[in-house]
Image (cartoon, rainbow, N blue to C red):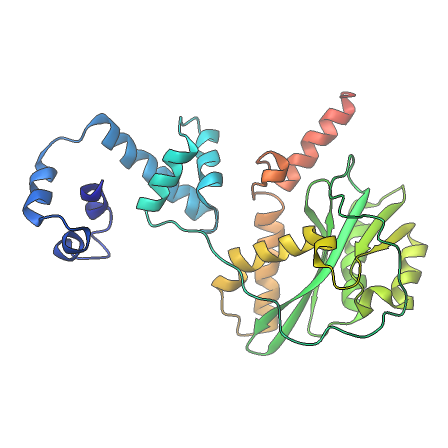
Length: 292
């Protein structure tokens, strides 16, 4: 497999340099080139190209598990171990996120609701529980703050807002989008942390007016809102860390593309049985109609 690595990366590195690093003699490599490839080697090359294409189609964010699942969707017979090996040889690696913005997070909240969710991150139907939170995006103009509302059953972002200030209006606009999109008829629990945006009188009034029940994390416990935190980690690992935003508007446009054009309709989720959030909700709707 050392020899197979060399032709796959000739556009990036010199042959002699790779032979030296891999500790193989260049004459042995050229002799290997003259030998017809075995069927397994040919399959390695073919599936490696499929993995590269699937990785590119994901915006170069998928790891080997989701790439393996993509190939299986195409009818390929491939194990996770094989997918991991081919992805590694192709130089495909996962992205990592970045740390929370430093600062002080103190102060007594104005209004506190019970922790009704209690880290039960499963729902039986859409629009039973929405979780919401705020994060920050760095641009050359300054911080852009993003608030999202996520449906717990599918992890779909049902509402979001991005503004230059972290105000109550930021959170309200995200929730307003969720209400407008989903048009819920039954009461929904909306779980948040104890941030001032979620404990304000305006927030509480909006919840009452739209038949939404507040629930809040315990003070200083980020695990109580782990689903929202997980989404932000994905966003920063798969998109934000890979970009440099000159303006807030450029960042806002990129967030739209990630959330509306990739994350919701396309991105595979382990929690959804490797279905996207949209496909998972469609499947759930069909199962409900069938009485399953």
